[in-house]
Image (cartoon, rainbow, N blue to C red; front, side, top):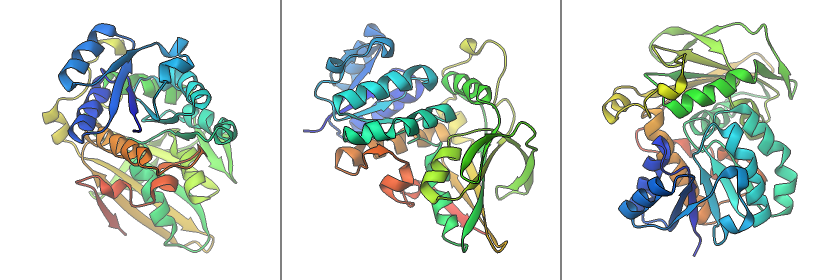
Length: 325
């Protein structure tokens, strides 16, 4: 029987994913670095656990595993050793990162992964599942799609782990895809987007869609933006932040993304996707992705959610609504 390994299962989002996997009756184990926390969670869920550090992961740590789902961020520190271990062990790799350099890494390892019949699928959480699915849908509505603009709306507070990942995203610099190539765009300007409640200002930021959007749609020119509200991107000592928003806080803030595609003739199509809060959506989407991979839905090498599961994958998560304009 195929077995899923959830790495980083005792973290804020990882724990929700492990609980979801248990509720679905999946055959899975949990893993991480903390023996005591893992033992406690494993006892609660009645599942086996493994203890290893990504800095010293070896092939035997993944023995008997078919799919690894990584929740341990910042992913700049965990993705590469886990991806390489998965390639060596013949294990499909999934994660929930928004950090663009992880997508670039997975892309660069794609040929090696394919040769070992391993799939590298980063971004099975709120970023990038909704925007990736929607980009493919909107691209079908114009002739010869030429440019793709994606804006994310980040409502409410974010988790400690996400705040650390945002530092990695900002550190990557401002990038865009121009004529199929990723290029630095330090002078990129903010833009206004309408998420369904009027125009709001969005600032450029380099999310993983600059990689996934290119692979999923083939559109050669892609720009990414984000609307930041309230204390979404905190500053100071990030280690002092709470694990993440409470269930009540998550329920109070739904998440949205807008996608615009312009064709060679100047025609533009636009859609908005609205979902439950990103922290609620991510464990649901990630575990559903893992379940499908366990059941044989996979493409060896680097790939994207829309390529593997189709452009309706985002809407398979309850509470998701797409509005076309």
